[in-house]
Amino acid sequence: MIEFTCSACGKRYTVPDAAAGRKAKCGCGEVLIVPAPAVATLTPDVNQLIAAKIPMRARRLIADDKQMTAAFANFPLIRIYSTTGDPPESYQIDYQVHSLDRGKKAPVPREQHRVEIQLTADYPRLSPKCRMLTPIFHPNIDTATICVGDHWTAGESLVDLVIRIGEMLAYQAYNIKSPLNAEAAMWADLNGGKLPTDPRSLHPAE
Image (cartoon, rainbow, N blue to C red; front, side, top):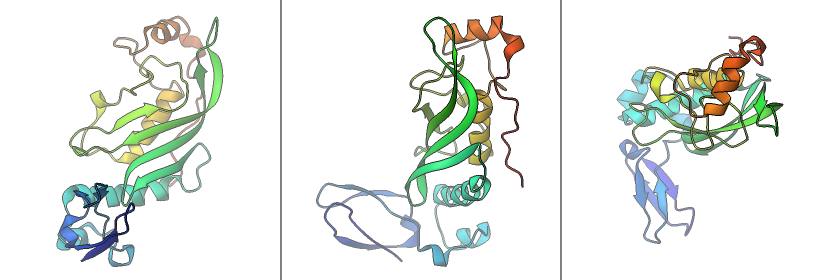
């Protein structure tokens, strides 16, 4: 059984393990997300998670959390800034990558970036919602969206998606044929010899 309390009023609840990851409304009006069972009862073994009757999406969130923590724990170019939920349903990721910001007359260098990745109720069937929290000048990124959906499959790991966004920031990956930012697409088309802005590998060492 899962025991948890409302963060607003402190009321205690006890629910079956199968309710992990579901949303519920407390009597005080606060919307709650049922947490996963205590970490001590879990292992990374998928078969054990299935045997515990944890819903598929919750199992995926638990696996993502473990993989993300292991991949970026000691990686200087990408790190997890913060998470929301237990297991996390939202991540803020910091990148230390040479990229570009909009300048007055031409793009200017920018090295520090923050991205928000939200794992929606339809995840992993549908791609996460990804957006920049810091300025960027890129053909496939605007103020509201990072264009990752066209290449998303449910089998892609969240770690791979985080790396793919980093490769976009580094201009190792961009598409000028269907841009979100036409100005950035035109600049990239005319300045291909200056790209990528950062050639370093964004894959953490295993």
